[in-house]
Length: 386
Length: 220
Image 1 (cartoon, rainbow over the protein chains, first blue to last red):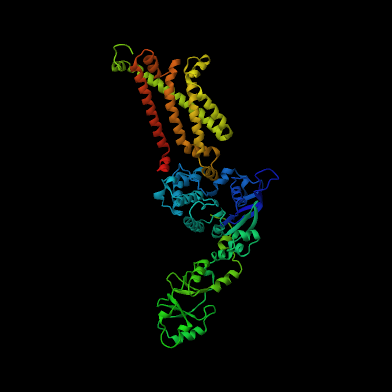
Image 2: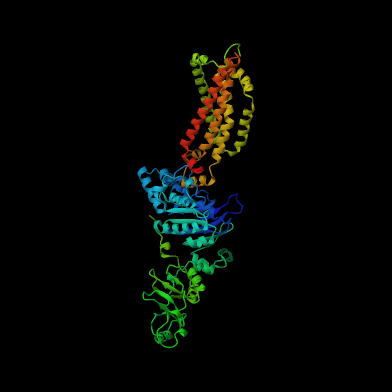
């Protein structure tokens, strides 16, 4: 747990405007707390005060209850992982030597260091055999960033500070690095303080977001969903953007919705029978029956007025292209797929393409109007981190 | 040139191998002292500049002025104080190395990227550890480049110190070759100075490649 109590930083003397002003934050063990805000909001200053690259003018910062001022700065820093935007790999050291920096400063035995280095490269998805002896100049931007993360994790610090860690890579690689880091964090459960100016990155990465405004004032500190649902001020509302409704949709997934069960028909079923069953079809799917094949895979929608007369159902009358979504699909992507199709319903399927249920635009809209979701249970659980 | 004598006399070279070898040794000895002393002084000055960046301009200014004093004038000025000694020669030679070495060391330390320094601090290096394990290794290619220029320059300058009787190969070039109009000695002296310069330069280049394998990776 990292705790800031009434922390202020002035770069000039007393009377000059503060860079950070009376900031109090408690970051729970194992959560990713993203500091976000426009330039000049003091987010980087705030982060650097935690490992004392910048010393606070007043206030107190503690890690697991211990005041950061109570031990020598270099010792403190060796216990805190640090990742910066330009990575700052040491160009004269191999990948292995870079990752080994902090363990070496801590005088680990050589065997333990080399085992740890290999373990970490594996963890960040770099094959130790191919990378151990390479110099940073021979790595791509994404590979450097991975080595930077491995280096920060080397001595297994409980706390990691990340200063715009994915800011210097192109959008496609950034997306991949973000996903990788979230997967990694799921395994290592560090207490992460993550600085960015990109609100979308904040929403994606954070368990909780601290939005700072100019002069280092805390504008709001809450879960991404709560901030998007209920911005605390006009500043926050402007900062998160006019599309905050859509942004909320990218936080929720199809599995969070109550799925509706459509009337299911198969090619060759009797039309009259299908008509009768459609009488009692659930709201929002009115008049449509879902046509599936022998393995329960969706073929398309059949409307009641295509079921006139007698005889078996003709698959040719089905509206093709029923968009299918998975339980893991974000509501944003699901909505987009539904809006693009002729029947604005999403068919939820499992990994074998079998129908699990259906979602409608109305169901998504209802979910948005509902209360903001609480942070995931694992993020709230405090306590020590291995 | 004395009458009736061949331009280059191999027999003189053979007869005087002892003296030539001795002069080569002297040449290397005087150069080595100048470079080592110059390196130590420059290193100390560069560390001072690292600590107090404002000293950079005055230090570079002073070393530039020293460099601008003609070497012969410098010897003449020093003789009343330090007499015809090795010390006189070394004072002049060392001051000439400073302008090159100090400049390159400061420049070398300045090439360390800001984000590398920030990362080093963030990892928990002490200031000294950062200097020895991060800054100096990264500055090494530029420091050695300075050493190579300084060594070749000094190698040539040493010969002038023959004027105060401390000239190494300069003795062959000037005292025998020019004063006694005996071109063989001049040719041998100049040839050896060039050969030694090239050799030492090559050795330093080799050392740089051994010390900084990563620099090759950077330019590949």
